[in-house]
Amino acid sequence: MDDLTSDAGVPVPDAYDPGGPPDEVDAAVLARLARITARIDPVPEGLVERSLFAATLAGLEAEVMELAYVEAPLTGVRGDTLGGTGEATPVEARTITFTHESLTVMISLSGAQGGQVRVDGWAVPAGVLSVELHRPGTDPLVVASDVDGRFSFDAVDRGLASLVVRRADEAVAADGGAGAVSTPVIEI
Amino acid sequence: MGGLARRLSRAVVALDSARPYPVRPAGPGAVHTLGDAMTRPTDALPEPNVDGVETSLGDRAAHALLEYRAGRQHALGELIREATPLLWHTVRAQGVDRQEADDVVQHTWAALVKHANTITEPHAVLKWLLVTARRAAWEAVRKTRDDARRRADLPDDSPDHPASLPAKDPTPDVRVLQDERDRILWGAMARLPKRCEELLRLVSLADRPDYRAISAAIGMPMGSIGSTRGRCLAKLRTILDEQGDFSWTT
Image (cartoon, rainbow over all chains, first blue to last red; front, side, top):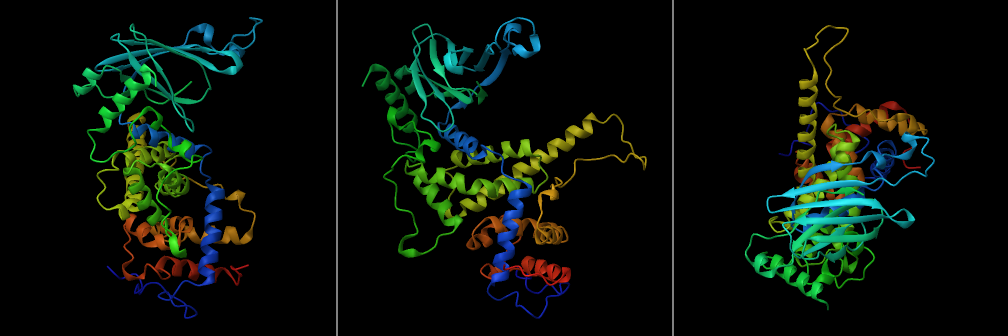
């Protein structure tokens, strides 16, 4: 399919040869076009970071859990809409439940010092699990749950995050049915 | 190494053993992020631009895939940084709104990682990315239109209120263009056939050697003229010449 230089409907001025090597005007026009494109429709801030994060999570080959339930208690509603409580803006507290065929994970988010977030979690069925908290641009935090399936991260920065849960039980892992599961990316 | 680390190590080994390629080295210390890899010295292969030979984005994409398969993530992180603008504008050119385009680009990179071991021809990675992004963009547009149709109670064919579908093209805000030549160039782009416009916009964001990959990805095989000025650029130059005698090189 090489009709690209022989389109009779397109007048091509004699001054340059469309089959010839690109000249400096070509280069200048393309360079200007790149600048215009970037100015008119800029790549969103943070898209590269979000893409890196998405690729990292995809590389974990974890099955993604479903977001089953989000509970934001009234007291956790942002303070400026409540008014008159006399308190500083309360940190948003939320409880989020994720489900997968073999596992349910509930996490509770609450304020920690310095604007950070405390994450308390509980996995069912109970058992010792390895829980990784992944965030963009940084190594994951890894904790183990206790035998009842409880785990916590004392203070993590706000932002996008995904929890990855792995069975720590080698026998089950070898069973083939116990790959890692991850939560969808959430804003904490 | 504590008990947790040992358990995690075993879990990671178990996960990796099922793969044809080690996607990452086994062990708890290996759970790094791609972003983190940016600042971390690696034992990666040298960049493929030895001997001063300039590499194209397509070459770097192939390199990144091979590195990733070998368990080294640095090059993929670099590729994501470099090629995300290209994917962004590829998706946006299909008429996807900014929020949705953001998701499509992320999903495209995630899809590359998931398919890292099944892409048979590493040098087709750039094309694979562009094709994947375009298909996902079309799917997003189709879904948006279907949703819009479902929301409409009745088709309204009155001339005053024509049934409207989402605009094919997001209207760019040309007011940001102060320079007269910028406005002339943008106006000339709008007069090009749609695929020419898309091709040139994407080519402008990539290296010249990627002309072929980009044109193939958007369904315009360039035949033998990949290394020369293409028909679209010739058309654009013609339109620009009609606009007046501007110097484009200064």
